[in-house]
Length: 264
Image (tube, rainbow, N blue to C red; front, side, top):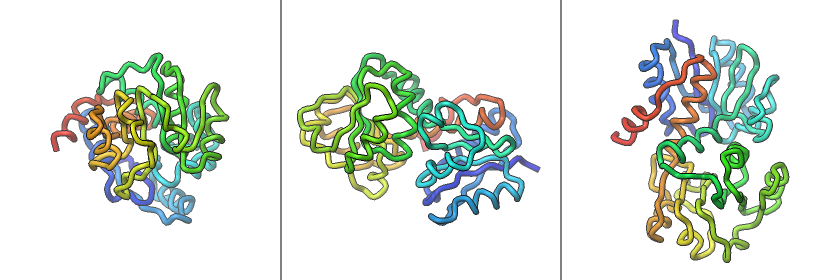
């Protein structure tokens, strides 16, 4: 019988994770089955336990459950502790990790060819997605990280956990300039965009939306401003590869999978 893994979240029907992990399993010869679990908003723990008792080996976790997943783990990696959010659960040792940050870094550096050292970077949003990447960005050598959120207090709470990270409300960005702007909000899923001041994107070299598989208003605004724009498909593939390695001890090649998904 295949070892079973899944993505848990709400919603999850749009996810490409099953296709990605199927490609990884074929390429590495691993006997893996990967599915989707759409849990009730108040039913995360119940759904996790049901999957575990049915023989599941581990889970990826997406919105809105990453912070709740952090609280159910007995053993955590340092990057999960820094994020206080978990996107990878391994049941055999009650282990939790957050592979979002390394996924973003690898996509920016390896697939998009972006040098991060010394750059000024703005993260939009202060939820679980943002929590997973701030520490990794600092480790990658980004010189200045700012976090903007509709509720400034939430951005301040996240920034306070990292040295030299600044937090602010969106309206405070009108005179700011950044090399890279990363949209870590889920606004694109509702065909909306963060309320950025006019001219902010025009001063950037790259606009990156963690939402993938759709042309979001944020990406359209970036292109209209003449700025290079990318969705988060590469990040999805790279964080999935890290999760696969944590589960199986085998690191799959990512470029062929990303090229296949882009082609489709």
